[in-house]
Length: 214
Ligand SMILES: Cc1cc2nc3c(=O)[nH]c(=O)nc-3n(C[C@H](O)[C@H](O)[C@H](O)COP(=O)(O)O)c2cc1C
Image (cartoon, protein in one colour):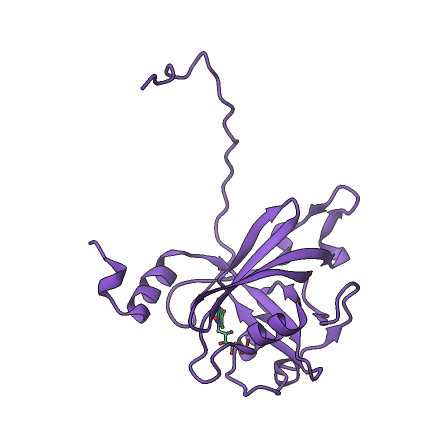
């Protein structure tokens, strides 16, 4: 089947993309409004984009009621945000923070989430999250009316001590983090599953076909 995106409504294209680009990690983003309200919301259009410097990106869709989502408003206004990662035993609370709360309500309070101060930025992190990235806004790109890609620089990383195998070497017990990821359709998630390993190949000129001379 071939789909020309221009010939299909955007919600249909959204279904095709979110049903295929899986599993997606979940950024559980905490921000501060200019009035000092802690906002928390999950975003699965998220990934690491580089490490020199450490860079992350978030995709914020248009909110039918508010236009820009509160997370986008707050990041634009303050230039700071925390990305917390979501373990299985916090998945219910993560889901609660996706509630369509009107501006000014704190999802941290709605979901009963404890916060802890960040070190380098003002928005707090989620105290029980196994990993939190303190981020400063690098740039925000409007990719549609009220649709935004936020690109941020990670300025500090918190990892709970119990997940570090060797803190000095930066060895993390990744399976023990027990993170959940977003799957297809409404409300589907991935937890656990099979892992496999492959060594990265090294180019061997003796074994490779000769280079093409076009
Ligand atoms: C697991 C999960 C992932 C989500 N990912 C996104 C996303 O990538 N982009 C987006 O705009 N909304 C996403 N949402 C919806 C937002 O979390 C939701 O609209 C939320 O109310 C936004 O809150 P805010 O206005 O406080 O930022 C996701 C929801 C869930 C439950």
